[in-house]
Image (tube, rainbow, N blue to C red; front, side, top):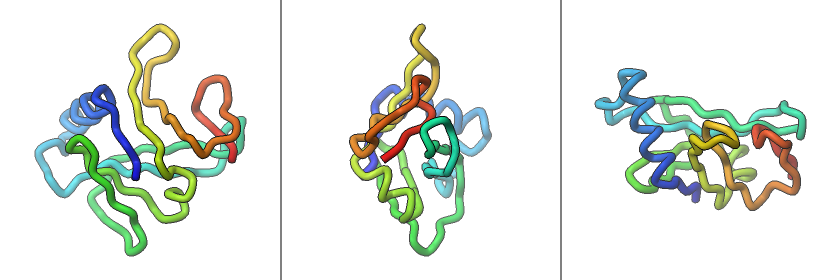
Length: 110
């Protein structure tokens, strides 16, 4: 499962409206893990409306979250959060599988 906080839910809804996909129920939040960043792996967020054969699909607080199977192995039980505070604005991942994260929280290692 991938979890979504209330703040992240609100920001996802706002961004979907700005991208003109908020009213289209076929769109969802795609979360993936890609190589890169100072710790080796980085998170990637996109809006998508095409599922792939091995996608894992979750819904939390009304947000449909989809990830590929490879990324899910890194994201299991992760919580997507959003912060607009002084310590950094943006989406943050609270990932219990990460053994190390970089200072900015943009990348991680397992």
